[in-house]
Length: 83
Ligand SMILES: [Zn+2]
View 1: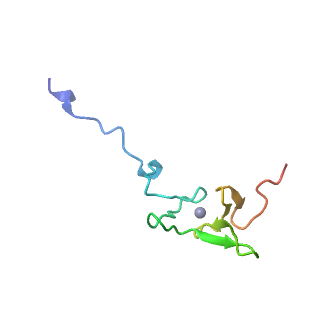
View 2: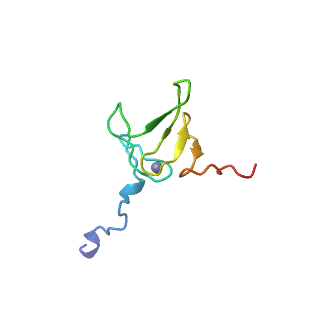
View 3: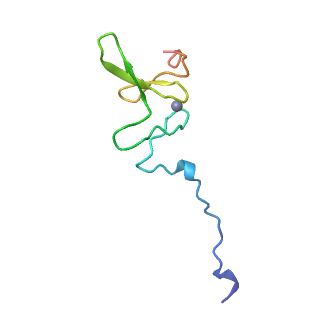
């Protein structure tokens, strides 16, 4: 009885890894894209046909397609360089 009552603070939460539902971090830069349930900070990418084909992270400028796959990283297009 006595000394070991104190709980060791070993399990410090690293809140960065705790992704709540209300957060929408960019996969690349971890920037918070979430504004509210309806809006995010994603910048829509529209082609000549006026169709949204993807989105751009306002922080790191990475382009994603509609499936969330990275199209171009920081403006570079060589992600899948070696096929
Ligand atoms: Zn980003």
